[in-house]
Structure formats: structure tokens, C-alpha cells
Image 1 (cartoon, rainbow, N blue to C red):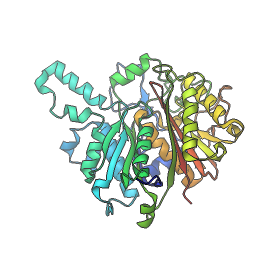
Image 2: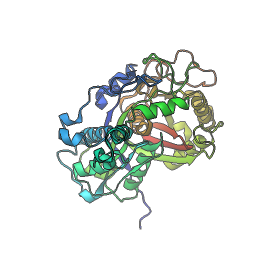
Image 3: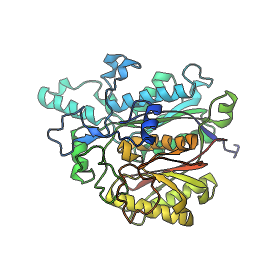
Image 4: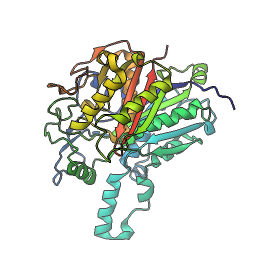
Length: 416
């Protein structure tokens, strides 16, 4: 077997979140410093301690992709995955004509928690009406791997098909795994990224009980990474989907190439079920592994899309880790936490934030960390406070860290 590795090209992207239903809309709002966090409208918040979130408004997949009856049989995270996969494939020019053998096309997605809204509704039906009123579509609707199952069914892909559940690093881990499928020559095209929607009573209540969520009642200012007044993350929902191809094959078909995936690292903190390692040990090793994988110097990185969840401990730990890895270069880095605008998309965060990392390379615009009005002295890097800036970036890095001490870092290279 050949030891040469294929280069991995990103040829299409699609996204949905509280900022909008398509990537162009989301990106324009992101770089203009708008917030996608709002008062929750899609659920009854009467019994909830939290009333805000990065909720997707006025979205109906049945308008263009699915029969309305079929749409009711699958949970909302699957709607987001299908919607953004369709956008990404169209963006890549693969909807009208796919030159690849279908058994060489696959899907790996990250889903952190699965179909909680459907679980809640079905349990209510069980309690009030009995077991026979639980839908036969309940199980296939809520299992995390149904995202990739539905995508491969919708588009006829017969290659690899599975989902990864690693909390808030799920989408990023999925991208790393999908890139390996291209790199090792096992597939020619992969759909990857993440999807999540757990905007319902139990997740909000559980995260609130952990004191993980912001108690700020103002939706526009609640998510404030690296600010001294931050008090927890704001939950979001949505999807971020990327299309990966073998670079040479993408070039041969005349595809526009937005970036290359050149490095990926994954580690464990081995410290605590929810708290980050206080000295950033796992994050440090993760970023170093990604740099080693990319075979570049730490000074080559120009932008970091930080995990930056707006939690008191997490933002400090990530800042410390970045300083340890980038040493004398740390103060020259452009950094932002786009969760300040989108909220935390949990298992989808690594997908949509990888897209933002690529858009930085493509557009030369660094999105801001909004609501950064009083920067924490312990978070002492350049987080692009409140206003986008322009910069010619050759390499960007995305960090995604999750409960259970799981870490992922991915490096993207500008395509020249």
C-alpha cells in the first residue's frame, strides 16, 4: 500500500444557526457584529430558569427538501443536517452533477446529544396516553446517527456513514475523521461537520443546574467570551456542513477550492467530567498535535477560532493553553470566539466554527468577539473585540473542547 497521502480540499459549505438559514446570510451578520441570540419562541419557557438562546427562527424544511408528513417523523437536528448538507453540496457544484462513484461518497457528522425534543414529546405521550401512543418513528428520529443515514439516503451515497458523539467537540472530531477518509484514499468525497438541536426543557434545566448557562436576561449581551462579566454559555442550535474532496480530483472537475485541511489533533484531559484542565494540558497537546500533523511552525498560524464558550474557567484555561503553544507569537494572533454571536451549538459548534475559520482565509476578514467590553486580565490576548478587522491569513486553527475532557484542534490552509 502506498504511503503517500492525498491532499484534502474543502469545496462546499452550508450552515444554519440563530443568525440565519444560509452561510452567506450568517457570515454577513457575523462580521457586522450582530447577535443571533434571542428570546426563545419555539418552546414554552414558563418552567425554565433560562429564557434565551441562539434559536433558529421561521425554519421549515418541508418548504423545499422534504414531504411535510415525513418531516414530522424526524427530529429537528436532522432537519438542520439535511438543510445544510443540501446547501453545501450545491455550493460545491455536486447537486446537479456528481462525478464520483456513489460508493466512494460518504458522510461522518458530529451530534452531541441527539433528539431530545422528540424524547420529551414522546415521554409526555407515554405518560398521558400510554405506550401504544409512542410513535414507531420515535427511535429512528432520535438516534444521533440518523443525520448521516438521512443524508446518504437523500443523496444516494453508499460509502461510510456514521456519527460521532463527543459532546462539544463532536463536529470537529467528525471533520478530522472525514478528512482521514480522503487523505487515506478510502473515499473521494465526504459530507462532514455537525448538527444539534436540544432547545427543550431537560437540556436547559440540566445545564442550568450545573450553573453552566448564563443568567443574563439580555439576549444580545449574554454571550460574552473573555469578558470579566461572563457567567456561562448561551445555548444555540443549528448545523455546519463541509464537503471534502481529494484535491487533485476536485481540481480536475474544476471545483472552487476554499481551503485545505492540513492538520488535526485530538487528546483527552483525563481530569474532570466537565471542568477543563486548569493548566490547559489536553488543549496544549491537542494544538501541538495539529501543528505536527500539518508539518508547520506555530508562527504560521494567523487566526484561531477559539472554543471560547463564555464560562469563567474555560476561557482562562484556553487562553493559558494558547500562550503555552504559541509563546512569543501569541500576541500576534488574531483570535475570536464566534459563540458570542451564535451561542454554543454544542455538537454542531466544531462544524460551523470550522466554516468560519475557512471564511477567514477566503475573505480576509476576522469576525469579532462581540460583547467584549471589559476584558478579563487573565484573558490577555487579542480577541478581536467588538469589530471585525482585515488580515491576510494563510493558516487558521479551530479549537473545540467538550465535557469528558475531549479536545479537537483542526488546521486549515488557504488555497493558492
